[in-house]
Image 1: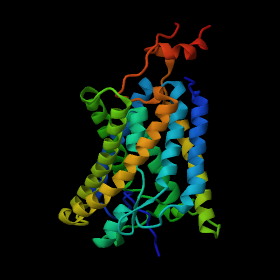
Image 2: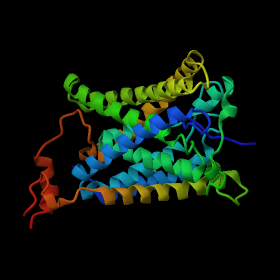
Image 3: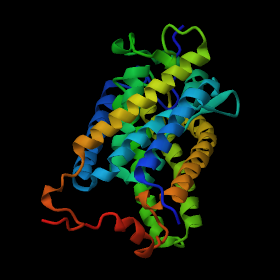
Image 4: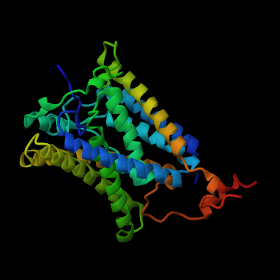
Length: 110
Length: 236
């Protein structure tokens, strides 16, 4: 049984994520979702507001600023978002990973 | 017009200050445990997996699928993250995704960020951690039973998130519980089916390519012999 390398697995996974966020997300349902629909029907949607620091979000509403075509704007923001989240997740994981100085459970050579 | 893309993402203004504060404490506590667990267990080889899983969950959260009555839903991903990385590290992955959405994309509140991390991340991840371990002792140790359990847990995680959100809205005085809970559970029972289908599909893909990357497996793994070829490279 051929086993995929971790590197190949990560590259493939990232490629799938980029593909979904860039090419598929522009065609996602634009209906209000669960909580938003309930808030609308039960009349508390208007309680919601943007935090002041969100007034100038880099990419408000998943629409990259300055692109008129909505689908393109969504696709571009998905592409950027996926790469950003990948880098952030990777970076944080790298910083908080186990350091092997204490000798792990796998019995590293001392 | 202000278009708030809420989903299960609670915007600012829905929750009272007290509820917001309590949920920030809960979120920070869960992330602190996550940091400790990572520091103890997260070996360097698995570091890229956190990045790719966060990226995948972010991407799939953008894919709103239609459910009944002009409503849509999207994946939360906490079950997926917990099954692959364990519940505590899953909390960290979900926090990365949800924080990026709030600060970068105005999706979900900033004051409500702690609540959103708890509802969409921590609760589902810990539920998955608990139920997968319970299932390990109760179910046949087959891949089929494992995937069925993953599907059930994924659905349940959405219902738990919807229940928690409803309770928080009610305690905040935004809407009576008797009004919001049935409505939330009704729509999220359908959204949960989507969560279930997507989570099982993603876990199946990992099962087919790298079953060793599944942290909360309930099936018997082929031991020793299949690992021999992979281990050969590390001999020196």
